[in-house]
Amino acid sequence: MTGFVTSNVVCVPVKTLQGGKIGVTHALNRKRGNFLPQDIELLGDLSQQAAIALQGAQIMATTMVFGVTYLANRIWTFSEEQV
Image 1: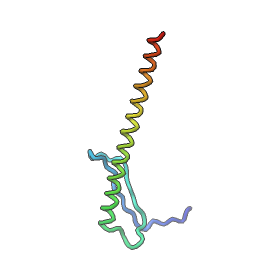
Image 2: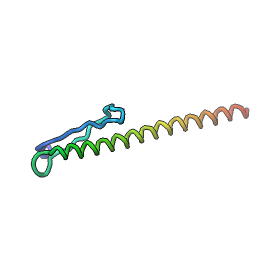
Image 3: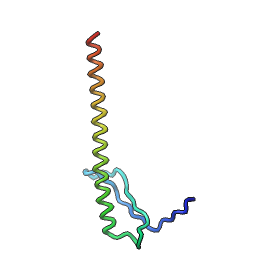
Image 4: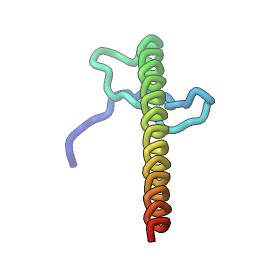
């Protein structure tokens, strides 16, 4: 279809600080030879940073939903008290 050929691949889990797996990071086709242990270590470090960013975004989204819900309830309660 696309003509892309996979020569080699390395995958590492994206883990939360608590150890839960939330995804996978992979790299394809090292330019020269096979992936080395330091390549895998670097990919693991990048995956760890991605997990921290993803968890932060998830916490922020949850906080925003709770904040909006709280404000909506306060406005609704205030409106009812005025009637």
